[in-house]
Image (cartoon, rainbow, N blue to C red; front, side, top):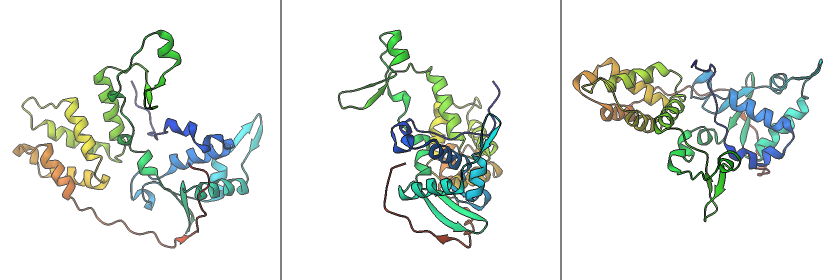
Length: 264
């Protein structure tokens, strides 16, 4: 099946229970736009991970929609009101910057890291009828925690899906593939099990993206795999890798943040 272009973001199910969901539709549209346009790694367009640089006018134009032939554009006042609400709830921080406004999504790393979500593989579903599997995917245990009763995919498919998610944090997937291929070459069969790939990617996910890619580059360039130095050696290189310090943005003027309001 053909891969989907453009990547993706993670949208937690709990957003349906948040105050954001009870706000007018413009709030959710702006929030999704911010998530879609935020830098997913440090250094992308000179931004840090989770940051967006835009003007009120740019955001308003991006949210243009049509009712029949009538073009509807949110007012700058409405956009400003929504962003102020996000700031007051500590969902984002706002700063004035040269060429636009710097918007930082404060919990971006937490919500965009798949390792912070409860794994479906840890849940044992009990499907007693077609009604249970189709209508009631969630029940609660004795402690009141939600239990997912949706049938799980085969174990191999579940691992593959998690592996693909973990790979999406890297801007240069070819580097990750070269690292995994090099690790595979340390085995007699030139292959590694899905469980090894998954464990390796989970360990890499705990390190900065620049460290992972930089460590792999050096590992492959020096052909350490030919000496039998496997994933443990590569992980040590990643941990000890020292990337270049990113340039600090200039002309940023902080804007005061009001006390918490609604929670994003």
